[in-house]
Image (cartoon, rainbow, N blue to C red; front, side, top):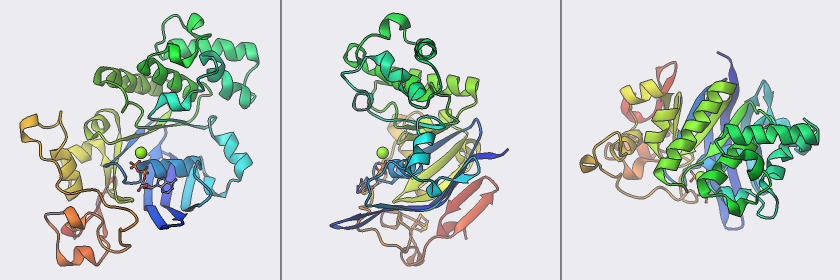
Length: 319
Ligand SMILES: Nc1ncnc2c1ncn2[C@@H]1O[C@H](COP(=O)(O)OP(=O)(O)O)[C@@H](O)[C@H]1O
Ligand code: SF4
Ligand SMILES: [Mg+2]
């Protein structure tokens, strides 16, 4: 199957007054059409920065290198004008906090129609019709009446549904969801993820889901990418990932994930995620917390081990 998106050796570094922050350090993965890829890892591992690099929603002091091949074209060669045509049209993004992404002073319906009107994809009448249809599709009851309400009149879960409607109305090929359910309670989280899955299946949309919840990732995705300290430490199809997880960090995540383990046997990974400002360029980023560490781990970058065509791990244990 052909890739919709191929990220190749992506590096994103922030040049701040206090020094360089190397948030993403040479990550590569491919996403096939109609599939879901999850990026998992603790907070601060570079997950958000990696997808904001795809969308090019970064401050000017960020330097992005590598290739982001979307439908055969390298987005890193696109200028602002071309990227504006891509964003919200071919690639849409939903964020963790729906309130900060919705304009509190503009009616919900108006905000949902925006991508269609902005990209001249529909007349106002058609856009209104589509917006009401989309609101219904994401499970908002009485969509016609709700169209003229303001964000504060919606609950957190309903606002997240509105964000999904807004992201999908222009029928993007790729939906990026960055921790889309973290601020919601567990039942609503499950509903929202099911909704994304359902719409994805119906429309054939590809999805990148960022989550720090490994259980969620294994439930909804075809492929899993584990990030640590701005690098990928393991990537595999969900099936291979569950059957044969290899990287000590992956094993640590699995051991500390409820649902997959009984609460009694949960073991959190000792230590703290690394401070990216202090992380060295050479050696394994996980070395400080790894119980299997060997002398070479801290001085040589771990090699890429091909477990199969669809499973790679970056660790000296498997040489
Ligand atoms: N705009 C920015 N300027 C400088 N550093 C940033 C910026 N955005 C993120 N970072 C740094 O990049 C690192 C990775 O952040 P992020 O991708 O948000 O992590 P995650 O999404 O995995 O929790 C963090 O250490 C953060 O401080
Ligand atoms: S490379 Fe070494 S330190 Fe890193 S995860 Fe593997 S064994 Fe642990
Ligand atoms: Mg994040």
